[in-house]
Amino acid sequence: MRKTTFPAVLSTFFVSYCFWILLTWSWATEELIAGAVVSLAVALFSARFFIHNKAFWFFNPAKFFIFLLYWVIIFPVELIKANWDMAKRCYGGCRKVNPGIVRVPVEIKGDYGQAQLANSITLTPGTMTLDICEDQGRDYYYVHWIDVAETDRDKAGDIIKGTMEKWLRRIWE
Image (tube, rainbow, N blue to C red; front, side, top):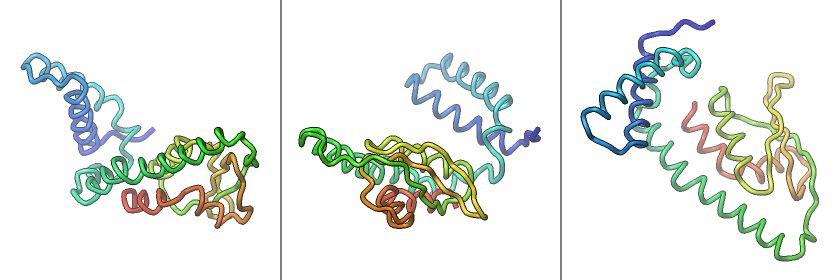
């Protein structure tokens, strides 16, 4: 089992406390104290599971800005494009459907970045990440795609991942 370090606890406490404040949106002293106690308990029990190395990477202003940019602009644009595509398919009589499972290469290293990309792909309509595997030193996703327009792995990956992988690599690497 991993050892819990002070930077990991401190980082987890800070993120948990900010999340507490966002959820309660209260500045009452009792709420802030309760939030600090709960956040400290969460940090003590869970820091070793969340923070593996570089405990303060999220506090890098450049990484944080790119993280916000991704979730406020980049991902919503990809989501809207996928929703528009699905709406055209549904209202067009669902004739342009060619479902299949595609093995897509992934360039992001690290569990958090790969999980975020897999979730981003799954959240966009028409795709679902089924599995993440490693083969000969390279990572791949198995993605169910509603319209297999390309059978070449690299080209299919470019279509499915869009710009999401490029932006997530900036955050996680």
